[in-house]
Length: 429
Image 1 (cartoon, rainbow, N blue to C red):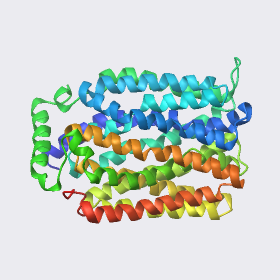
Image 2: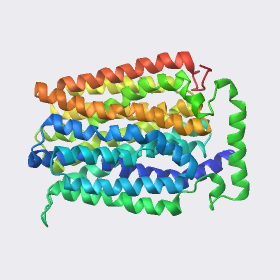
Image 3: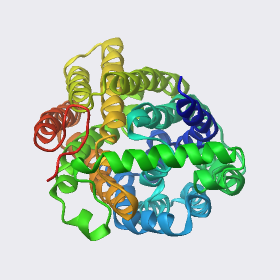
């Protein structure tokens, strides 16, 4: 291992666990509504389309505020801005325990998305301050492993909390209250745990800070042939950023369309709340292993595009299997395949835009890309709810999600051929 690689490993050991924990509580607070629905929908009289709209409207708030949020992070620094994001969304997540009807459901979910806007692209931007492109695949995958890990932790926990009630509150209300509190506490702790840049890290020596700066500067100076973008308006005028929305959106629509409905689908197979919690955990455990292996493979082979496409094809096969198979074991196995494919595709995908975005362009571009793509987080749950209301089952909704994953695979291959080389380095637009 080269000395510089050892320094980046040291930084990863310090930063990735904190970043992953941030995303664990983030994903738990946005997706635990899927578990709350097991009893909340009946208690409040929510039809499938009402739940689908309310769970997905989170991403409208996310969409509207993501770019401004990431630009603020670039301006004021990750430490203070991430603290603000986490404290406000934690408080709003806890407030969701007091939803009383469709209107309060829609309003609180919208503002929860607005409060959380900027966390994910902010953390991807933050990685560009610390890690070179050649190692970014594995570190993004390790960070994103927090998403399925949130469900590994939250599935059994949420299933258990649903069966607890007292002091005038139902189990779903206690679940939302107790699972929102860690976000507030961790947000305050970030003021001590998250240095803005390598130069501010007290646990790096002066020589290590210089080495990181030199490696990243060398990468920037040697990669000009990829048509890198530095200015915000330059980024907005570059068609590569806009075209990359298509595969990202297509991956995300499946990820949330399945994720927010999986507890209800599994519960409908005849399992108890606690059993549902443990069974939901299984596909996400598989996804954690798959996405880390995909990130390592992508870095070692120096290949990005085909890793994304192959993973998306696997996801499509898993979703189609879940739609067409009928035995509970085969359905859950299909969920495992689908989750592994979607999360692996997403992890490697983010090495593509980070290869061409720098500085303010990175702050705005990553947020812009993620905000449009995360409209899939609105469309997926709403599509599933609407189709369930229309047909009475999940078959056509799951097949629709499978079609979107197929579109992601095909589009990323075409985009890769046009705008990136095999290693994910950008070509000028």
